[in-house]
Image (cartoon, rainbow, N blue to C red; front, side, top):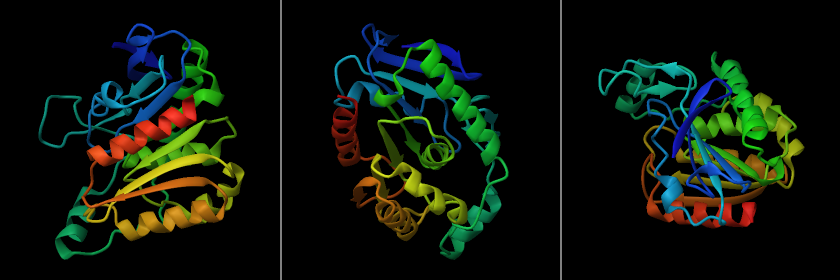
Length: 240
């Protein structure tokens, strides 16, 4: 594995012909969630059953957080969230419905992700037709937003424990991605992002003609073994 700046973001690059992103194999770009480090998803590249030569890019989000734990720089975000509001909702058992919200930092995060993908294509020679974009939680939300805001070709989209944001903006754009393969997973006991909202997102995507593989699981805000196995099979089909 090596570290390189792509689109201004620090990225861990793995897999490929030399385990450091070498060669001309397909590419999976995976975005971590809120409060995680740039290394949070890196372990997936050794575990997933993907086509030979597949390269992985794991960018660190641009915003550094001070959450009171871990070394400096170990907690990052694509955009800021109201932590107190989230904690109050969890304590009260209230459902966090973010469907009407457009986070203030989403446009800047989108620009950062697009610049990243531009560099992945230019510097790594990635073929857009053999590139899957995805992520976990906030990274999943950003991945879908980028897919809906650009016309760049993608081989597939991976949405792990994400949710529906900006419904009034996203839903009219979904038909532009008709036919796109999507893997969407969500825990039925997720305390942070409600399962029923994930189902609502799924239904919108299916209605718009996206090819959604829905992977519910008995768990919380996580990526269990069952989901990782499904993800490997999805990447194998999308990138072969």
